[in-house]
Length: 362
Image (tube, rainbow, N blue to C red; front, side, top):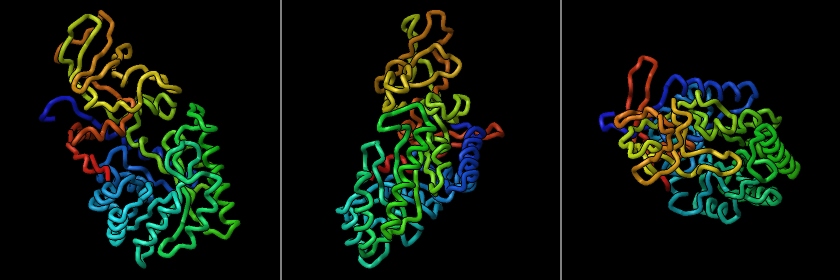
């Protein structure tokens, strides 16, 4: 931490427990674990996930896949539709080095993959929208699209996948067990319909950090793809997925001003903390932008670019120069704001780790 605060600090012992916890969930239910590395974006941590029992990894972008391949990862799923010739050619080149699976969610996207592949077989999975209304073919149209993709040259359709998160019946929810079971049942039913039509679907890939424990129990699910579990965060604690004490990542900040008895200002603002999980939004109803460890009554209520404003009790003992540890609402987007994180090991030493895939948006 030669540059001082603010910085992201990772508790290595807690992280290791989190990795083993999710690996046990997968093993006990007989499903593969393919974690999404968007949370950490660090090849070294991806390798630790594989050593703990993961079968491969998931990424969102081709550039992330390249960073992970360069870091020694050999089994990668790009869970994102690729529709430009340049990116498809990147994937073909990368597929010569590692096992690569790519996502597709439209007839046009499949046609483009098929045309650019030019005699090289691409392993693909069909993305299905199960309620998040993001990418993914509409559920009722998935069987028809799968049939068309299976007949295309250069494409090997091996599975289906979805990302749903904590959604139940189309709405965000805190009922994680019901959400996970519904997610799994929707996808297993869809796979069965495809098989009835003679479409070969081996993999049914589902599951986010909050639903993984439950969706893994659905017979017919073959793979779960949680990401945030590696560190957890305040959002996951509010969902009930973990406790605050299990959160392995904190942002260390310094109090730089006490301009009023009820106000403390820290040196971390919106360029330090993610703001995509905002305070007050249903169903989480979080108060502020993070949990201040040791000061449960303090609220990180406002952020500007370089300042964080904490509402505190007038008798709060925080002074200029004090450091604070804050568990952010959303760790994935927070890590992506930092060039490096600092990893605290069991021996008390601290190691700097470069966030190698930070900013890989293409």
